[in-house]
Amino acid sequence: MTEWPKISVVTPSYNQGAFLERTIRSVLDQNYPDLDYIVIDGGSADQSVDIIRRHAQDLSYWVSEEDRGQSHAINKGLERANGELLTWLNSDDMLEPGALAAVAEAYRKNPEAGAFVGHGAKVNRRGHVEYYKKPSDLSFEGMCQWMDGRNFMQPSCFFTRDAWNTAGPLDEDIHIALDVDLWLRMVKQFEFVPVDILLSRALIHDDAKTTAYRNLMVVDCALVIIRHGGERFVRQHLDNLAERLTLLEERRIRHRLDRLYRSLFGPISKPGADRPSPD
Image (tube, rainbow, N blue to C red; front, side):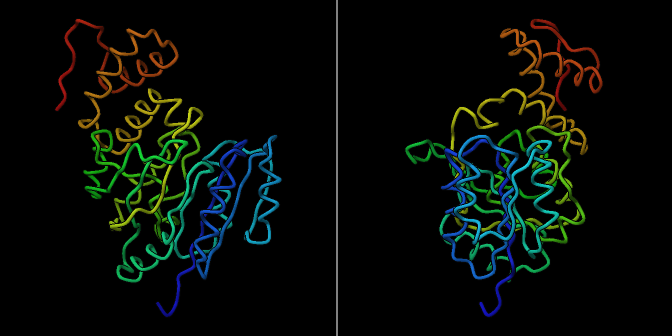
């Protein structure tokens, strides 16, 4: 490639010193010729700042200060980013070797596309792959079926500045499914192109959002998909979750789900009662 597009990567982090070094190294070791790497730390009290300082000369910008959470940190970073292609890489995720070059090549071949999505893997602490995901249906309707397996892994998605300027920023009121909301906004106006290569690995650990808040993830994803007009794709998921949460007596999540269900489908049904049928 005669001219490499500038790629901006933003890493939001808060007290993730146990994983941060690997994340930063996975980006810097790409040896990508036009990298804009930004780290936004939320005022960590662990070894995170020492790790960031060790790599400061290779970063475009970094800061450690209190913020309003993950989505706010990402928005702050992307406001400073100046790349043609953008993404964020959480501080417990890693890019695969050659990932940035592969995305740059996909962009060269599809300059009108808005986003590029590769394969993703989830690995345990020993590095063993426990889950591998290839992107499937990258249409709007396909993404509305996110909860039915038509999904992809966030760190394996890169998007153009035009797509971000049109669809961003992230909604800071969404706790978990903030990426799904952004993809649904983007795909309404831009093409998502698959990249047939593994681009990233996400670490499975107890503190990861998708591990610690599985039930909230279902509710957040459902709420986001409903917001974009995909009610018919999530009714059964909400119904199943309502029964499971009733049995587990998870009061806080059940209350949130109950409010969501009432606002959309009427009174929530109890185990053993008739339930609204999915479309």
